[in-house]
Amino acid sequence: MTTNARKPRERGPVKFILLHHDGCPRREFHYAVLHDGAVTSVRAETEFAQHPSAIAVVIQGSFDDEPPPNQQIDGLKRLLVQLVRRYPAATIGAHRQVRGDIETTCPGRKFPMRDLARWSETGLPKARDEAIERSVEEQYSKI
Image (cartoon, rainbow, N blue to C red; front, top):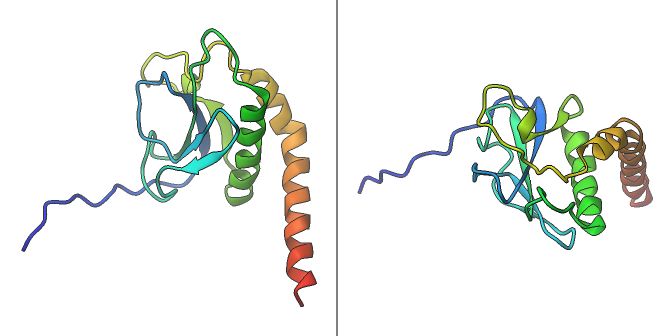
């Protein structure tokens, strides 16, 4: 028996981690950050989602009128620490920053992108280093 199931397209090298919101007209994401800050995996990181060289993260909600709750931003930051550990050269950006793509406000006018960008320059490297340190300590404590 032959099937016509298509093999998922593979994603290229990761250059970006792009943030989206539920109001985004695009619908394929790697991760979702829920209102309570929980993170769910939506598709394998190796598969193509929004853009060929990006990991796509959707933040549940629409942020054109109100910003996301603090616990959701905290969950997003925890995910970004993990992703930056795997893709250290990746740049974090908003979907609206992608040139040549559809015109959008994604992840929303009230999404705190400037605050997140500042955190990615100072808080993210510190959080990443602390996570690496914890991981090393856990590995050596088992010896």
